[in-house]
Length: 136
Image (cartoon, rainbow, N blue to C red):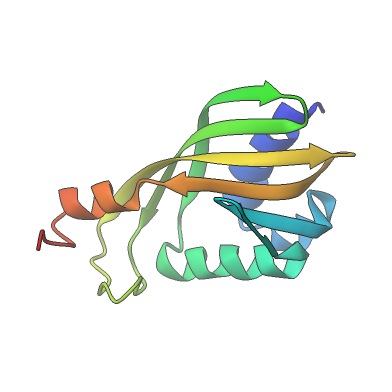
């Protein structure tokens, strides 16, 4: 698989089907999370914790990649995440509503593994649309 296919498979199969035992095949032990100009070490365990937290909030969530672009080792993926809001998230009580959140992930792939992960999800827009948050 090329880098684009690796990233797509990772999100649509490994993440969507909660195959966390397979993480070491797709995530580097030295994986970093990029947030703006900050780099935070997450490794395989940090990625596992992140995905478990998402599954606690949206137990049935799946990800669908709708567009991808490649630049050098970077794969930019536009996605739709869909799941039932069954767990508390940032103080928001579970609604049992099926929510769709769009976003963009930027992953750097080296030697077949994600070594750097970053991106953004449009959580605010979805929560506002479903009246889970109110304007101040």
